[in-house]
Amino acid sequence: MTTLRAAPPVSGVRLTLDAARDHLLGLQSPEGWWKGELQTNVTMDAEDLLLREFLGIRAPEDTAEAARWIRSEQRDDGTWANFHGGPGDLSTTVEAYVALRLAGDLPSAPHMRAAADFVRQAGGIEGARVFTRIWLAMFGQWPWERLPVLPPELIFLPSWFPLNVYDWACWARQTIVPLTIVSARRPVRPLPFGLAELRTGRSARTRQRAGRDAVPGWDAVFRALDRGLHGYERRPVGSLRRAAMRRAAEWIVARQELDGCWGGIQPPWVYSLIALNLCGYDIAHPVMRRGVEGLDRFTVRDERGRRLEACQSPVWDTALAMNALLDAGLPGDHAALGQAAGWMAGQEIRGPGDWAVRRPSLPPGGWAFEFDNDWYPDVDDTAETILALRRVSHPDVRPVIGRALRWMTGMASKDGGFAAFDADNTRELCTRLPFCDFGAVIDPPSADVTAHVVEALAAEGHAHSGVVRRAVVWLLKAQEPGGSWFGRWGANHVYGTGAVLPALIAAGVRPDATCVRRAVTWLENHQNGDGGWGEDMRSYDDPAWIGRGESTPSQTAWALMALLAAGERTPAVERGVEWLVRRQRPDGTWDEPHFTGTGFPGDFYINYHLYRLVFPISALGRYLTREGPP
Image (cartoon, helix red, strand yellow):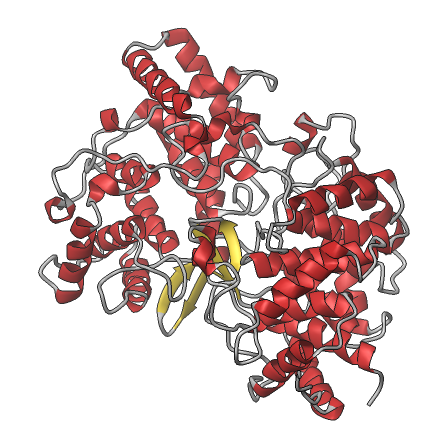
């Protein structure tokens, strides 16, 4: 016989919600937006120092502050990890070590000896990822001849031809183009020290990406292609090479944003600066000056030192904050929401972008993730913004929503699903290149993005449209055997399931449907003993971790929102709500050191500092709405 658990007192839940709501309101900027810190790992800070060293602009005070932050993130075993509580990562540790050597830390220091011991045991520099070895090659610590070749002539391949630059995901595309210039120039700007203590003397290891072994012959094909490219690199066609370098540099310059960034993210930013410098752009050139100065906007300084955000998320955070406040009962005509809506309307992207290569006839509309990223609006931010704006009283929002709906709908892939930045960006040949040993390099449809689109379209009265029907079929086919959904942009199956269940219900799927019941059962079976939910980032690599991990506020909220959407009034829901109530801090927010956002599954993870607040507010607000007034 099951013992029913009493629900937490509604008055206590209301007090918790009100405190969180007030804290969130207090974080709004005077311009109307919200933005939490986007925390990643120390490769951002190490590579920032290496970039400045390469350009000859590394300042002693910046170096000291960044080194202090990097040291503070080192663990007792001498390693640096890619996420809180994760295992030591070889490449991250190599890059952190080199940065600290730049800062003057001696190899004989205990923390450096511990790091070097780990590096050698884990395979040394030879076992590091290709991107790490590219950084080392630029400073004479790795031979260029032992790196995969990316010729700049790729820029001339038409969009229908395999391995053209638009076959890559937008984040990879913006990185690959400048790297073709770097690969062709093969610069060496020596460091004042060597790295013998990080070497094993073995041959470099090629990391095998997930899924690459499915077609064994491809590895041999691409190794042969790489050998051929190395041969061409020794004697390129001079006129073609010069034209390709010019075209690639023009492509890069054309995509610089107003704030100096490229794509609003760190990887293309640093490699674009390096590539343009190699093409003759000195540090005083306006493009270079804007690029370097723009990095200051992404810099966080506090008592622990100086660190660089890999990206900034004001549009995403503002949409989530607006939806959270509305879920908490704030009226749609509240001044804070009106101010946010006005700011969001002003962020609409009305110009062309790389997405138009696959959808040339589609009129623009929608939003990007960042303050400045007009080349790359994304479907996920657009869906979440539609969900927020439609609930707010503001004179400017209806035309904006109409344009966004048209653009978002037109970004459906042929299979009915939706990806983040491009439609039909699914050619897997890119993933098989020897160069691609780190991070996702294509942008296929995902369950979480598709679900957010379905939810937004259903909210706007399109639940029975052909686009939604095809997307729902896509989601049903994507359900895992255990009942969950994979989470591409959040950790992981808890995030995917938390996104899909509300979308299916909004699209008209009955709560008693088999797909819904299987997902509810999966969530209930993966609730932690303390009442919360959590899923460790290791679930992307090790199935044993799927649905398992220390409870976190954001993941507990995702599970609750899914269960509430499915009409659950079970002890599992009450225990989850109680977990949030009991763990709220005195200031109205929650602690969440764990990373619950995903950049590249298996490689790069994010701690969105606002997630710990906005998602619990939405979950508790929806819980109280369903429970009735106190």
